[in-house]
Image 1 (cartoon, rainbow, N blue to C red):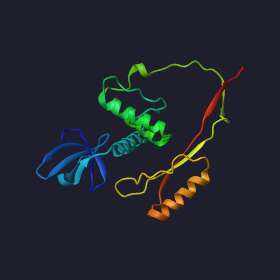
Image 2: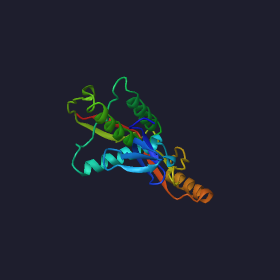
Image 3: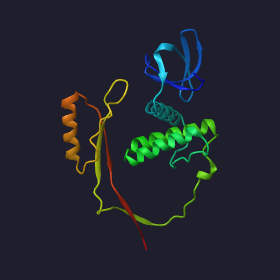
Image 4: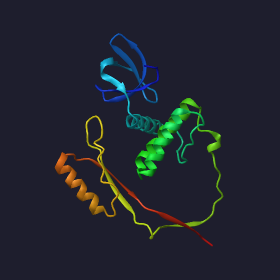
Length: 202
């Protein structure tokens, strides 16, 4: 296993960067830096994309609380030719297509973290300057909003079941009740998506 590989320690339920191995133990470092810890080599595995995203978001939040980061308001742009940037960007595009705003945010956070570590910051080509133009933003009445729920119950991984897009909150809630009766799962992430229209003033 290459140093720097993100792995999941099943005993501590933490994601860490693989550093080295000594006999039956491996040395792991927290994502984003921190105190290393020892793990049983038989208890680690390569972290999934969701686990890597969650660990990256957690590390970035901790650094933000320490005042080490500026407010990230602009979506990062992948560095051309970088496979890691491309992987995260593809995951972000899939999340956007599924109207999963939470996963889009997670992908942006991890992409920024990767670019700071591997590329020394976001590429300058991603900077854009806009001239202020007054607009009014309204909900598009010609398109129905969508509601959706995802089951995130589970000890090591989310269940992943989804209600699919629904046109009313009551439909989502009814799906949640049925799913809970069938599985005894109790935790869900819900999302709402609508369409907006910008109308220029003046």
